[in-house]
Length: 296
Image 1 (tube, rainbow, N blue to C red):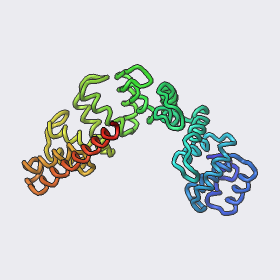
Image 2 (tube, helix red, strand yellow; image 1 turned 60 degrees about the vertical axis):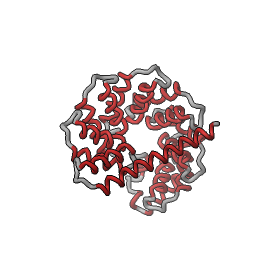
Image 3 (spheres, one colour; image 1 turned 90 degrees about the vertical axis):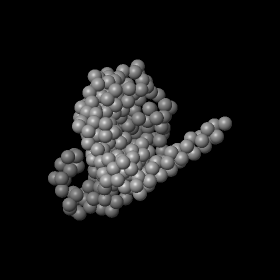
Image 4 (tube, helix red, strand yellow; image 1 turned 180 degrees about the vertical axis):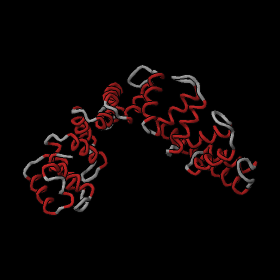
């Protein structure tokens, strides 16, 4: 609960008179009132949704030192909500909040340094801010820092540290980290090869919507790696991935339809998915061809 909520008994969201008092407090420079008013305008709670007014009051609160307002203001600038997109100002406010210990801002600042958005690309500083966010318990930063360790960007390559960080992020529900653990367990990188654990995390990631994991899970079921072979489940996950545009899944799904494995033989659907895969291959071939033509 913010100070202004405590001041007004936490009732202002449901009381028009208290709402007016909140507005007056914000106008009179109460930084917590400014922050709470911004939230109301942003969410459209007890007032109209108004991104411009949300931006105005977040800016007031941010300038008055409210850390969460600094973070939210940076997000508005990043997505161009209530104001024009401006990555340089995004960097400024993320840095302000990050230096005050806001772990999500620290992670976001690391991302800006990693990608070179609003600031010159700097892998070492990306590593620094991801590390800060990790120390403060941010699971997105755990994944991002793990990625830097896996690829050796901004730090010496260390697959054991990558595995450790991916695992921490995966255990807290980060679906991309769950998917990343699969290949490490499968290939024995940063840890011992363990097909059962590769299957476990692949299933988690697939159920959490990671398309690559959906294909990989189909593959594990088809080959019986880490789990008993099950062509019906292989068919199910290949279909999920195929519908999401994975070429290999489309081809494998077509093959299952063609041979009647995991499903009934259906030549019409086999042809359909073979054709889908061929069209996707042709599309990517043309994109790559255009890329090389433009480079010449």
